[in-house]
Length: 38
Image 1 (cartoon, rainbow, N blue to C red):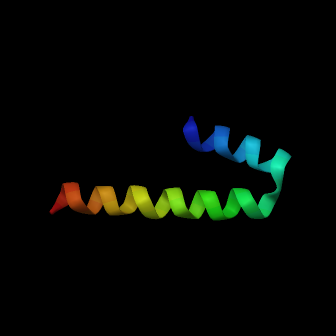
Image 2: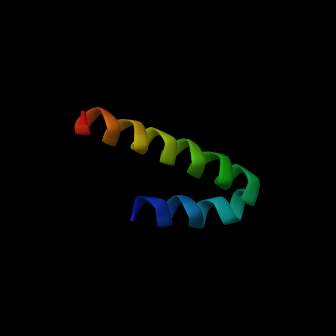
């Protein structure tokens, strides 16, 4: 839901900005999952 919102706003502002934001968010969520798992 949040990702789809970011992707939608990203298309309006520019694909490159959306990509960097998406990758940063994905990296953050992966780190959070790793901390929870360990």
